[in-house]
Image (cartoon, helix red, strand yellow):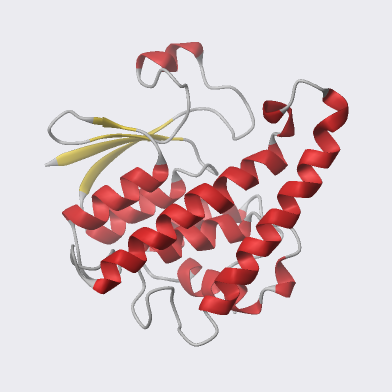
Length: 214
């Protein structure tokens, strides 16, 4: 059973690649010759009409988009270990909560900060959209920092794909130092022996912070 993941280095597809690796799933990585912030080839619409990565092809031929959906799918297909809890448990409920929270309230707001022009038809409004996005992300990371005050990971003592998702998004956020618990978690995730080589390939050449080295 082999999965197929379309992605480009440095994108949000990192978390799906890491998820497949943590799950021990067999997958082929199709790395696109493109960098984040640039348009994907028009021909990529044949794979994903929305022309975004990542795209995950399952062994039975289903096509998935949306990172949060892929994480949920992988966690249910390969429960346990550092992937995710068993379906129907209280921990699974928390897992779903945090994956959806990160997708709706952090990832989307991050896109508003990076691509404000997508959210207005008035160029002059871009600075305001970006400032509001940073404030909103600050509020979200403040909540997440509080959740991590008493536990090592979002679900307690066991890492899950929700933590990998959080670490990726936090590494993209300006003003990181004010969120000590999120910062510590990001270092833990980045030095995980399975995640580390994927993290380094995707982010070390772009980030001023060498995550996982402390």
